[in-house]
Image (cartoon, rainbow, N blue to C red; front, side, top):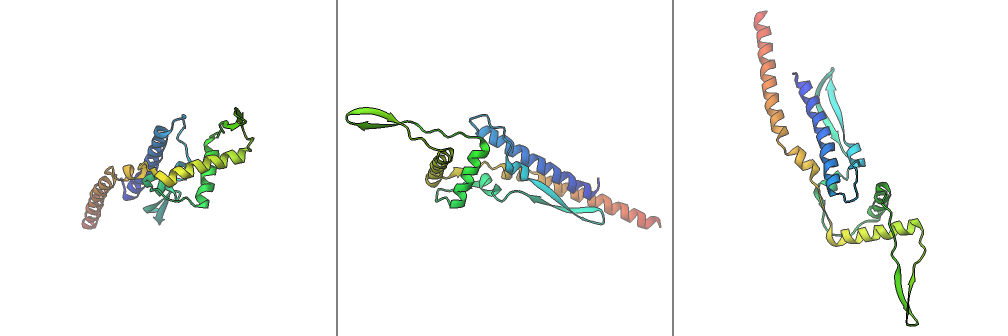
Length: 179
């Protein structure tokens, strides 16, 4: 197997394993039967670096927020952009926020009054609740990236490269001595 093939195989396996590990982590964390398919998983892609038809490297692309999914987040304020992302996330997951009845005491009688809210207001309230939880507690990362990268695959690739280059060098020396 050539060095070019080793790089291509490594990159494809890395991409596949990252997507599968992310999906597994998301499914395990879900309480409502979420399929695990995500925009982050779909954003994982590989671009090869080649010269004269030979692959000599690759670049791995992920959405920039992969870091926070992987490592988690400490408690703290959520930006306006973060709040908008929460609303988009709620919509993309198909979550349906509900508003509970508010009990009020009026003239010594308990009455249930429910304010009629638009769907947008319900989403905003739901996002506010999530935002407050993040401000107080942060959230735990799922380490999908770290687990895949640190599973020993890089060391195995280094070993295979050494073996491959040794074989290639021996073939070149043999070809040179035959002439």
